[in-house]
Image 1 (cartoon, one colour):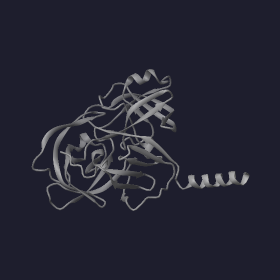
Image 2: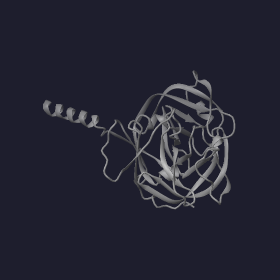
Image 3: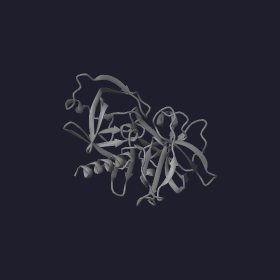
Image 4: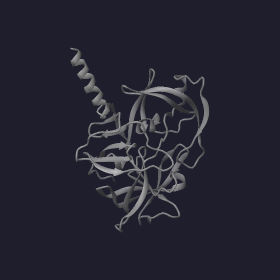
Length: 301
């Protein structure tokens, strides 16, 4: 019996060391964005938006009424910036707490509670606490997020690797080629904004590498933490990422100084594009893996 127990322990340790332990968490895909539920003690917060642009540990809550359900006795006041043309948002910062994603507890996390709701269709944001500490897999066919504990997972040939990189923070970037109007594609440096409901946001600035489409329409593009974002809607003829080429996609065109706080970005890749694939983020190895799913051929009008 002792030999069997020892054998089980050895198998279990080996199983863990090769990254086979997984934490499976339901996701909800709506409004071209991806949401989960987060629990702090007995408080369950639904519709928490997953955001690769939230580049540090912690959880941000949008509804000030959450202050009534959490211990804010040692909280400090802070200012939080984001996309938009307005001022930074005021908030309370709880320095350290534990929250749970399904059965997965994440310890020693700051929690930010905004003093005024920004009016988003979400109750909160979470980012690096997930993407930065797990190999993070999204299966949009099954509506699941899978967190892999360690730095290695085995993948089949169905998955295609796309290199990602980081600049001065923990936001993932990649290089992609874009053709606006059937001209030769130009390579652009773009970052992934998992919380954006766009296919693609092309950033207008003096040194931009592309020209605007001949046909665009003025459009309210959404709201960031620092206010409203206005720009244009149009179409691009081709977007090439890794081995995949998608044609005739809707794109937003927005002033870089309003839409983005990332230096030298040419464009932003949004969740509407990415959810055509099942996805694996591996920040540690600087890799993004893509596998077309049932939404791959969807046309966005």
